[in-house]
Every structure is written in C-alpha cells, then in structure tokens.
Image 1 (cartoon, rainbow, N blue to C red):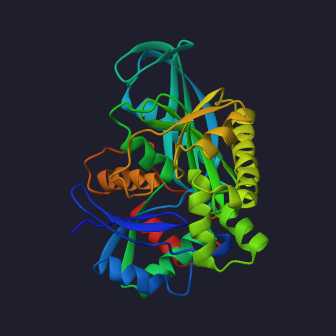
Image 2 (image 1 turned 180 degrees about the horizontal axis):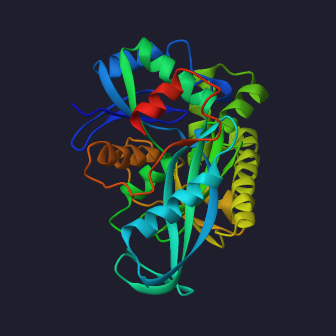
Length: 347
C-alpha cells in the first residue's frame, strides 16, 4: 500500500487520494525531531515504505539556467540533457537535490507553455528550480522513520506538493506558507514551483512572545495567540493584541522583503497557514501586500497548510505526475553512509 507522510512544524498527516489521518507535529524548536516523533508516527501509519513530503523549513531553492544549441526539432533527450546539466551545478557540500522543476523554457528567446519536445528551434534555454535539503536532516528523518518501522522510499519538496495541490489553476499570485517558526514564499509558473525563499519568522513566534510577555504556559499562550491572530480579543486584552500585531508585522515584512529581493512578489499574495483575519491583513498591508486565502483547506477545522498534504498524496499515489527533472543528486556522495545508500538505491 502506498503511504505518503506530509510534515510541517505543527502537524503531520498520512495522506492519500481518498483519506487523510492527522497527527501532531514531529518537531520541536529549531526543526529538531521530538523524542516522541517515532511514537507519533507509529500511531499514524502502518509499518512499511513511505514517501515523505518535507516541511517548508527543510528545503532551499536554487534557480539555474542552461542554454543548448539545437538546430532542429527538440527531443526528449535534449530536454533531459539540459535539466541534467542544471542539476550538475545545483549541488552543494552536505546538501541533496531532492526535487527539480523546469520553471521556464525559451525557444529562440521566446517563452513557451507546455513541452518543447517536437518544436523546431535553433536554441533552447531551460530555467530549472532545484530544491535542496540538508543531508543531516534526511539522515535524522530516516532514523526516526526506522524507529517507527517505516522505510523511506522517496521524498517530495513542499513546493512540489503545492504545485500538485493547485493543478486546477486556483493560484494566480505567489503563495506564502506560514508554519511554526518559519515562513516561505513560493512562486508558481502554472502548476510548477519556479522559486522559493525561506525566512526564520513564523506564527509560532506570536505564541512565544505572548508566553514570555504574560508568563503563560504553552496551552494558554497558544489559545491567546489564536484569538489574537483572529482579532477576537476584548478591549481589556489590548496589550496582547499589540504584542501579537507587532510580531505579525515583522513576520509579514521579513517574508515579503525576501520575496521581493528574489524578484517574484509585488502587491498580492496568497496565504496558507494563517487565517485571513483583520490582524493578518493589516500586518501584510504594512508591507504593501494584499493577501487572500486560496480556498484549498480540506475542512473548515483544518490548518490550510494541510492543502499541501493533498498534493503530496496525489504525487505519492501516482495521480499527479512528476516531471522528468525530479531527481536526487549529491555534491559529495562518498562522505556519508546510511541515507546515501537509500539515495543510490532509489535515485
């Protein structure tokens, strides 16, 4: 049976085409696995092979461009060679390329939609968005899965899952994923991720600020944070609203400025991971951005970031195709054991 595990800082989900089982997050502070992670996974999934959709904080994006002289009709081999050339330049020491997508293709300097195969051109330029993850994280992930009697059989970048979740064409602006202590902005070209940027500012900082300011326990701080983010605090709790609002503004400013430096965000964005409430709208408006929800949440009670779990489940079940660029390569494959055996076996 195909099993796909979706991970974020705050929630985990065993995803498939028709069903989803949800559990608590596997991560503590700074993205480290909790000691209870194997137990959480054991309650969520059956022993066996699993494809894992990595959390937003675990992938980094590099965009590379390859130029090829063609002089005839483009073949599948031409496209594969260009992608391979890009991937050969994407690797870094201690990093693995877990997924890659052609984000833009130009034939004779003209951008095209769809596949270039079969089209005549003198020159082809392929821009590839490569998503990398730290080998140390993948090694730790494999060990945690093994404790839960699960074998890692594949990985999916969260950007790739986002693309699969929105194949219906519902996304017409960059997406901002807010998850735990991180925020990630993702640019899409059609249903493929073209670029992403990550910042170390996320909604969990609101809860942390409230806990510190008012000396609250974790559950009480989380409840106050939820009400503050939704804009449901009475006047007598005005200080809490100010604390939460200041942090939301910082979170919005950091991710917006990072996306603007990367060249793919102007004045509109779609938000996953926070409700589109007056405090959230006001925070992004301070950075000149109007935000809205994509309408992808599976249920009213679900965190909207679980929409990515649906995309991951479609990929894991083979219902959403992965491009010929999907690959995993290593910069220095001889220096580690364990996870590298898995990489060689599967990719």
